Image (cartoon, rainbow, N blue to C red; front, side, top):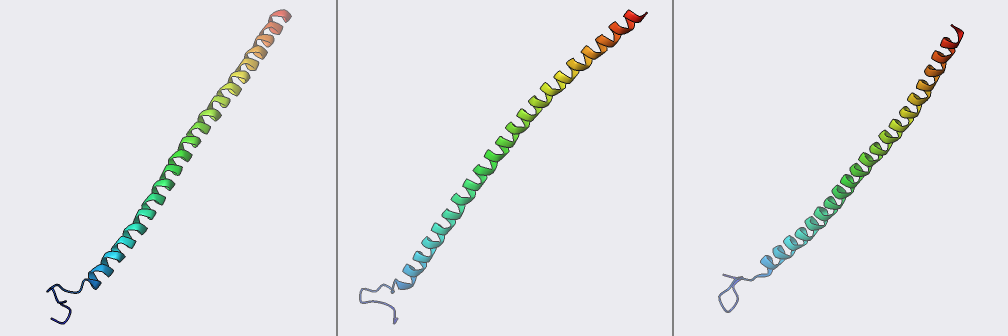
Length: 87
């Protein structure tokens, strides 16, 4: 064969080129995978922070509703006392 060298083996140049290209492709895929994992981590961290925000908002809503209920109860008590006083 014309690509065979003196010791009986074929020329490894093509195999070397393919190997290099596959290594480059593997490096590129690794970079894409790492980037994807970082984005996924950031997404889950954002979900967690949104969940914490909802918890804080719901706690604030509970506090505001509790205050409004206390004011309402106090007004009802005053109205009842005023009714009893006028009777």
